[in-house]
Length: 315
Image (cartoon, rainbow, N blue to C red; front, side):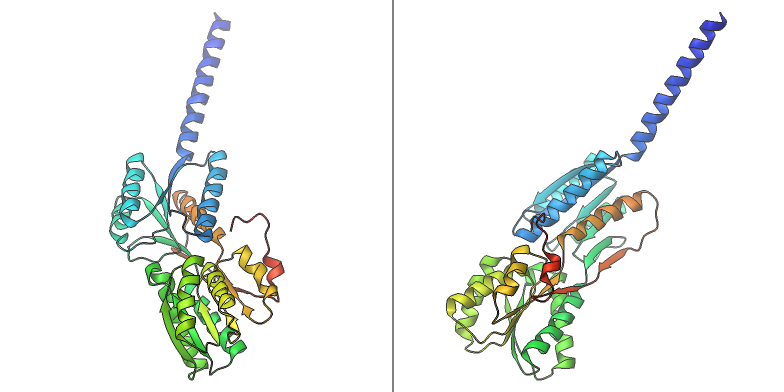
């Protein structure tokens, strides 16, 4: 009788342990959603890659379950956000490149979901954000161009209005700094996009329209790759400097190969999205975090590019 009671007690304790462990595992596995744009160029591909790699690591640790969506426009991303809410997402990492995402993101926050925006600044109360320092990229770009091309140079700004706050802040940093340190700088502004195809097409037209250009304030490495191709095809030798932004390995490798042009990039690595994923999990863990994390600007050119060559990078 005593032996039977002992076995029964052991079974009860085992059952309690199993149920407790299951409950703890269930509580630990947060539901996390990721919303990214469809891949339009290498940098966006890098963002999606690093977001999923970090999510896989956390899922393997039993920390999260995750679902990841990519979208072609704001309407599609809004539908995907609704799908994540129906799934029971407790946190969402969003890269909302289109106007109008403020409303659905605010609605998700109002329902108690933690939302961490990557890169893009939007007007939503309670949203977290991880970003590079877009305004400082413009500041550093102005200083670099003035230093290499002089305070009275003719500079073309390649802005990207469709990118919202990213382009606005980079342009603001450049224009305000140039006005302070080189008020006689001649600035011409043209719209393009963050792709090498648009950089090639648009800058080819710009070269035809302008017989003398000393420097180019480009905001993106891939745009700059296209612009450099246009410069080469036009046989132009007047351009002394072109900037960029992002962290494209192909662009880095071009830096020492173009002795006639100083090629610069403001490092804006897609790996920053890892910080956004970790921030979301920290908030769910109850850790107090700053609502905005800004990654400092690093300048890369032919003098230090070798330190930033990464054979494992998808970008």
